Each structure stands twice: as C-alpha cells, then as structure tokens.
Amino acid sequence: MSNNRYYNRNHNAPPQQERKRSNEWPKKSNTTLPSKEQLSISEVPYVDTHAHLHYVLEKLPDVFNITSYDILKRDHFPSNFESCINVLCDPLSFNSNEIFPNTFMDWQVMAKTSFMYLAVGVHPHNAKDYNDYVENNMMSILNHPKCIALGEIGLDYHYKNSPKDIQKRVLLKQIEKAIKLEKPLVIHTREAEEDTWEILSNNVPKEWKIHVHCFTDSPRFAKQLLDHFPNLYIGITGVVTFGSAKNTQNIIKDIVPLNRILLETDAPYMIPAKLNKNKRSFDKVTISHSGMIPLVAEKIAQLKGIELDEVMRNARENTRNMYGV
Ligand SMILES: [Zn+2]
Image (tube, rainbow, N blue to C red; front, side, top):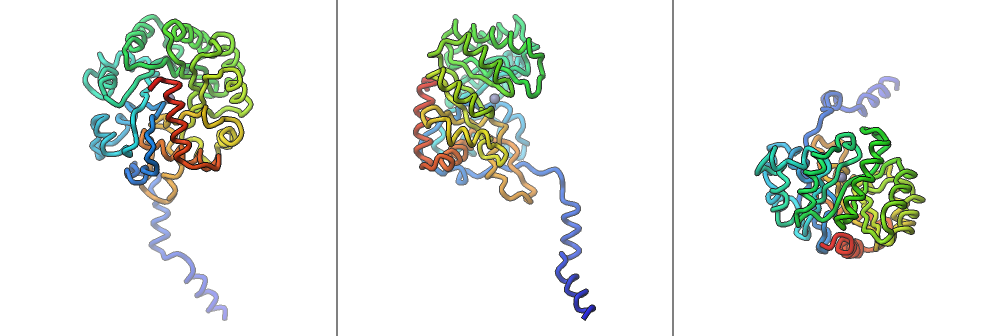
C-alpha cells in the first residue's frame, strides 16, 4: 500500500527533464511581432493619434529587417491603417535632421513619409533642457506644414526627471507658443492633477483643441477636464487592456463619451495585454506599433458594451475634429 502511494506520487510529478527546463527558463525573452491577420479585426480606417515610431525602428532588432517606415507599414500594419501622428518630445530629436540626416531618425524624413504627421514639444522629463537653442529647433519643426500640433508637453510628478517649478514654467512657455501659432495642444499629465488643472484652466482658452494623451489619472480629473474644455479629447492607449488599469477602465465605462475618445498606441510603449496571453512563451511582444490600434479599440468596445466598428468610426471622426486630418 505504502509502496503504491509512493509510486503514484512520483508518477504524478513532472518528468525530470521538464523540471530542469523550467528551472533554466530564460529570464530574457525574444521580441516577436504579431501577424497582420491578428490585427485585422476591423475594416474601418483609423489614425494612430500618438506614436513615437522612430523609437520603434530604433528598438527593433535587425532580424525583422525593418529599415524604413514604409517597410514597417507594409509588413506589419493592417490595411485599415491610414496615418499616424509621430511625436517628437526629446530635444535631441529636434535637430535630428543634422545629427542623423536621411535616416529614420531624421525628422525631415518623417515629414516626407506619406502617412506620417508630426507633433513637437519638450516633454516634462526634458523640461530642464529647455533653452533658446532647443526652442529655435522646435520652431522650425512647428513651421513645417506636416506638423499639426504642439506637444507632448505637461507635468510628470511620477518620475520627477525635472524639478516641478521648471516643469511648470516650461509648460506655460510652450502653451503661450501654441496659442500664438494657433496649434492644438498634446498634454502629458501624470500624478500632477492639481497643477495641470491650474495651468490649463488659467491659460488655455476654453475652446482650444486639447488631446490629453495616455490618460491614467482619476475619473474625477477626466470629468473636470471634459466639462470645462468642450474640444478636449481623452487619449486611450494599450494601458486600457492591462489588468491593473482600473482607473482607465472606469473612465471608459462611466466618464468619457464615445465622441471624446482618441485612439493611440504611444508606441513603442503600452503593448496591448492580449498579445502576450501566452505568458510561458519565450517569444514576447515587447514593442508596440501603430498596427495595434484595433486591439485598443476592441477593449474600449468591450468596456462600453458596443461594437468594435462603432468605436473605430467615432475615433476617426474625433481625430478629424481634433487634428483636422
Ligand atoms: Zn508619448
């Protein structure tokens, strides 16, 4: 009897080889990308309203052989992808036409890419680097016809890469520029609700077009912004698919109407959770790109209890109202 139990216990244990394999399971995973078929879940045309595709190309290993924006689009975006707004927010990229001429890092190459629009502004992380030289470079991009907004600018008290008072001063300075140039604003705000509210409500005209990108703050703050600014839109990224993103999910369910949502990837960040469902897989999607927008919309549709195409159609219309494209 006891022998038999012993035998059974051993029999149920994983084979020796299997156990060894899981002990040696590599911590570092390979980067993979989803197939176009996985992303082709809607036929409604769309715009990725906020991406940093130059970082996507920079991060992709050579094995993918993606050496240009055209190749990235051709081989990896579903056919309903229309265009994207590529955001330059690091001062180093403002004169990338001199540092990296004729490469995918060169902002003039981005501007020449048929399906790409630009937005430019000094990110709160880089506020400490703001000076006349940076501002002049920023102005030359802002004057390009493909540059359709100023941003992302704002306040980030989560990382505090620049001191708070400098972040506030640089945000204000850039808001003044946007108003003078009549450019829509792209706002980044994280754990800085009070100061962001104070600066926006006191310095930006009520009717101004504002895209609050990758919104993760409180539902109360979302409502305050939407009520005060009639042309303000809430940008939703792959964050909405994360199990931990309860704030963002509640905002979609209860606060933001369909006609105030913009779809964005914030590529290369915020990879939709669905793409890494198989947690044991050695290959992981570690980089997002503009082809993944339909998966963001799919989650919004699920949260609102409506059809995916309805989210896609509304977001397309909102993009036209916000950016004129
Ligand atoms: Zn961004």
